[in-house]
Image (tube, rainbow, N blue to C red):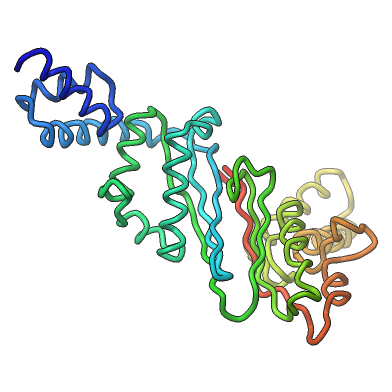
Length: 288
């Protein structure tokens, strides 16, 4: 192949795949200048590269939301470093995924098997992006709030762009009257982002979490040398505080420490009781 044609093909292949000059040349040499076969060759090579990176920890990244017709989707995409989270290729990938996530209503399996604008499946574009950037990238979790049975509100903490940040909270409320008490929704979403509740009510907190916390509390008190009967009383008080601190309705309202979230709901109830039906909070890398 003439050197000019080879250089043109390398340029074209780089634009299509984002892979470096040397790897593109090797791919074209291996496939006798055939662009399509070279793309396939590089994709296979990308998969090999990506698989080696999957054992690493990806705890940075972005959370994105999309709202339309009172429906809201949320998705978390992780990278290994914050440097990559600021990479424009990564950001563009995340933005397109957020659009698709809304369309598939937060179903990650459907999202992974959806085609992106370039005609390639999300899961294959993910592999290509990993090969190009050189870091582990995962589509970690998603959720979707429909517009039935209540109204949805969300809050993006320290947004890097519109609807993109490191923490996003969504809440669904019942009993909202437009123009009267609908401003409270965004404030409750902000509270959730700041206070990290585990459930709406105390009995909604996962029993495994409660049992583990109780085990830690009892061990801590016993190790301090307290008699068993006193340790039991102290542990009851501590676990009660844990349940209050982690159930949304019983949390202290971030905007007024004299009130609980349940008080704020009562104060803002107009035509009927204002209720929290559901909520979610995503924080980048939380629990990784």
